[in-house]
Image (cartoon, rainbow, N blue to C red; front, side, top):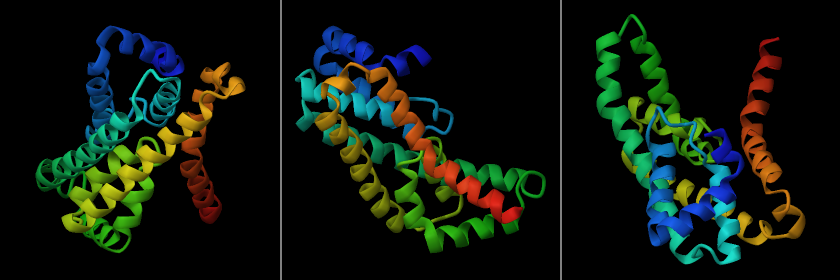
Length: 207
């Protein structure tokens, strides 16, 4: 998995050569799983989008097919995770209420998502791991689905478009293309910066 993430360009080119048009289905499943399955936050997200954008710039992939396909994958994954949280997560809460989760915590979660849910769902798109758990928690917190689905759609389109187009326009600049592994690491590190800054602020506040 580490080798796949660090050498995404090489592996994706091999997939394109081996599977042709089916590579779009493979990419769809990766983005869907990374977003929609609570146990799959380890799958590449930001780095995958950047590299696929670069491959579109090279002509190996078609941007017109890739953007809507991955935006749909992200949106479907988000909604799948929401309903898993709302249907299965709530049953787990009811089963273990008082031992693992208190009812007052669930009420606070619901109140938080009512006040800040839209912003949370939208911004979580750009933070690894958080984007996997945010829709799940939104489901458990009974966030209004109409509000969730609106910001989920906006977040999915924004996330896919911004990072993929960044790869498309900048991924084939010689200095970036020749150091794509370092760029992939850079994209991964940068995507964790918001969460790190937030954690630092909380530590300072608690201190």
